[in-house]
Amino acid sequence: MAKKKKAPEGSAGAPAWMATFSDLMNLLLCFFVLLFAMSNVDAEKFQQVVASLQSSFSILPAGGATIGDGQMVGSGISQLKELDVYYNQAMNNNSDGEGDGGNADVKEQFEAEALKESEKMAEEIETELMQQGLSDVVNTDFNSSYVQLTLSGAILFDSGKAEIQADAKAIIAKIAKIIEKYKENIIEIEGHTDNVPIRSSKYPSNDVLSSYRALAVADYLREISSVNNKYLKYSGRGEYNPIADNTTVEGRAKNRRVEIKIYNSYISNN
Image 1 (spheres, helix red, strand yellow):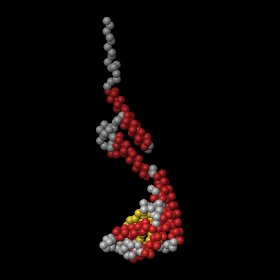
Image 2 (cartoon, one colour; image 1 turned 90 degrees about the horizontal axis):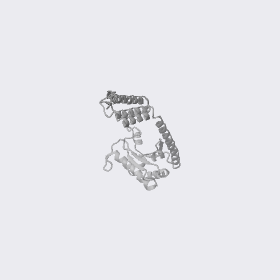
Image 3 (spheres, one colour; image 1 turned 180 degrees about the vertical axis):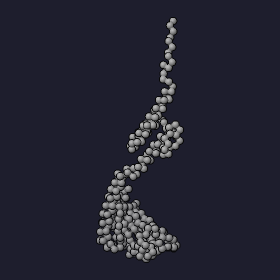
Image 4 (cartoon, rainbow, N blue to C red; image 1 turned 120 degrees about the vertical axis):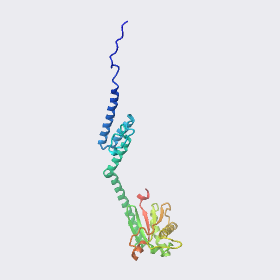
């Protein structure tokens, strides 16, 4: 019976070291693909590379230091997840100065349209105030958010009190007819005082006094008009937002005031 020939050594397969060498080459390939992806300022492509490496090879699970410290290799191969976060943060930081042109344009356009509407509202209100004979009593102003009507506190209230004077109610009634046209807009009433301290059993501070005055105007508007309570707000601002110098009599008189802000539709509907 013929003897079988013995196969020569090494013909059974590649040497064991080649498997380790192949793994090393794969890791190096991944490493250079990663570097290539980072060299292009294309976040979408980088995200694709990150996802591919994580799902296919499951490499870079942990490491010593992050790429932010300048070290790519920690224990084995370093952190791909941290690298992803670091890269996204870098992209966001770069876009803060350069890539927000589109958002800035949209914001400027929005503000321009809102300012245009406020200006139109202000013109309409000023016309109504003139017809009602209130041009000398009510000051008007506007910005991209609202039209503001300012009334002197001396016209509306006695010193140190928050009850509306009888003569002032006729003024508020005329204003109510004007702002009823904007009853679906936010209307905010703010009370302001000067910085002279007030101490009484009912109004222990200027904050309290200004709040009561704003509330008095808001309540009277609710009573005599069809303003929507859902959109009617009031607040007391005390002495903290002066429009004139509190060291003079004239300045303090200007600071004692009530402001009625009628917001445009761009603000009211957002």
